[in-house]
Length: 190
Image 1 (cartoon, helix red, strand yellow):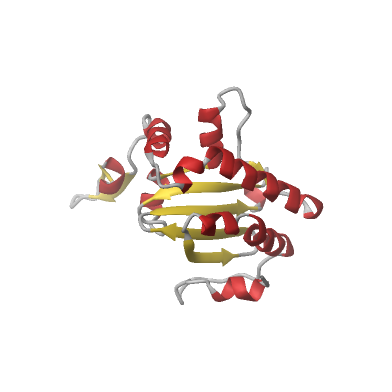
Image 2: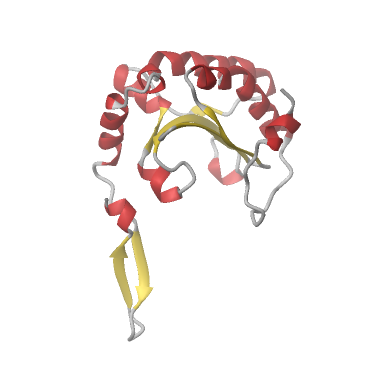
């Protein structure tokens, strides 16, 4: 599948700024579509959104209320550069929703094999893209199979553990006297 087919499926709002994708992000996204997306589709997930930018890429596939996301970053401030396969439930486009209602493949691996040194995947160099994505796909099938099959119990357990000590998002606003007041963002409280 060519990159023009990838970009064609993009559902970006007209107001969003678009950057010319870097060769690294283009290659990564094309190979992710080749190595990992067939697994998503095999389990009934369908393309929702694809964004390929200068320093990042985002590929989201949905099945009803569940989603799978491949997210990568090569922003200079995000070193070491990495990518993740993310499992989520709910709205994959609302930052508050997905921040609280998603977790990564490496957390599944860490839960299933506590002695493993599970982390985000290192963003691969040109020569390492295919082996890295092939490994990520194998781990997706090994550690994420329950989620892929629609069994969300392990996902809920991991998400609960991940979020148990997090504070809700704080909102700072001025009152009628000009003093700052703090309140909590309702979705993150929930």
